[in-house]
Length: 475
Ligand SMILES: Nc1nc2c(ncn2[C@@H]2O[C@H](COP(=O)(O)OP(=O)(O)O)[C@@H](O)[C@H]2O)c(=O)[nH]1
Ligand SMILES: [Mg+2]
Image 1 (cartoon, rainbow, N blue to C red):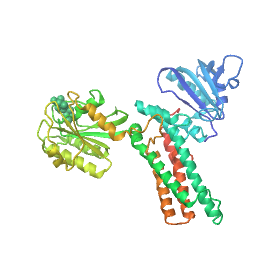
Image 2 (cartoon, rainbow, N blue to C red):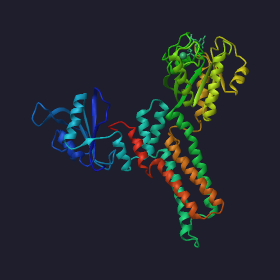
Image 3 (cartoon, rainbow, N blue to C red):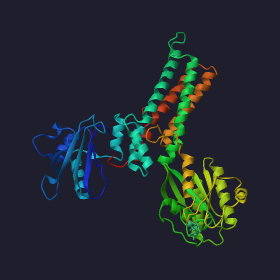
Image 4 (cartoon, rainbow, N blue to C red):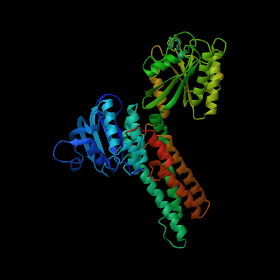
């Protein structure tokens, strides 16, 4: 796989001023020399990392042989000092879709093959140019929808990036522990080990403490990078769609006073402070009388959305007395929270412009629990600053700087750290119970492997394949 030469268009499809084709692999230069004829006396190979003007050549059916189809730039980056670690050539041509396709086909005719999604970055990883966490940050840099995502993603890619540094330090400490364990196993009678038993135990609990602090950053990392699935639920006409529109900053949902206006689920991404809310507006939970078949499907979807949410905004309209529909909503919220202990629910009492602050006791009775509650008016905007501040406070740790602290940014990274912690906890238990180092070393090895999978220094092929398949072709 790594021995061949790949090529792809790295800029998005469609018309543009400029398009960039990238060629990587041992034949990159010879492929480029067939499709690019530099102006001037020097061949491309003689001028590494320098933009060269020249003609782009391709086989055109109306002519025999190859002919010039464009004038543009070529840059040659000799490996290993390139993005992928291999020889790379970039061709900058004009951004016409047919022109770009024609030049791409010319690179194939010249000996390259089409790159798979993420294959350039995958090669960079396999050649040691990027760690897995850096590759994930790069993916996030391209996908970023919020400023906070951008800030955390670029910090994750920086030279000496905080997560990479922190993982390396943890890896080193764990390696030292393991070498101590090996010394004890191989030379039980000699004092070769670098650490005493007590020091090993201290070191283990220190490591566990530091891993736990790193793990805690996932609360923020998850909210910023992966986003929080959040659902608006409540009876018909409580004002869910109006709240959705206010949070979204535009009239995405239809708002009327006709009950049952929202039928299907609407979704949008909204940034609330640093939090990316994946917000969903749902149909009210009316009982079957008064609603038709389409609305019934909407209601089923709303119930499913409740189960998928990590944050439930339970909307009530206190300008009217509670009714059976409110009680149905409360029962559904309660059931969803019972099924998913990590789900948080808020009570959002809407239409505060129409009513003074009310006693919430009947709601707590009907809900069977007290929720954090906020009064808002989707009509006037009152209370929304408090609502967004509250949501932010649920997920964002003020002590974590997105631009300079290590941050676990996805569930995969979290799972690796959890795996390492579980193995270290087993080692700690065994050692405290007086078990021999043979047993402890197996757990330490497992912890080391799990820790190493976080940044990819120990490789799991399936995970690597899955990460890079999410990139676009040409990246
Ligand atoms: N006075 C007032 N009316 C509101 C407020 N929020 C929504 N409404 C009105 O309540 C009705 C139902 O709103 P809508 O957002 O469609 O409710 P949904 O069925 O829960 O999605 C509409 O006529 C809205 O204009 C509010 O905060 N104050
Ligand atoms: Mg609605």
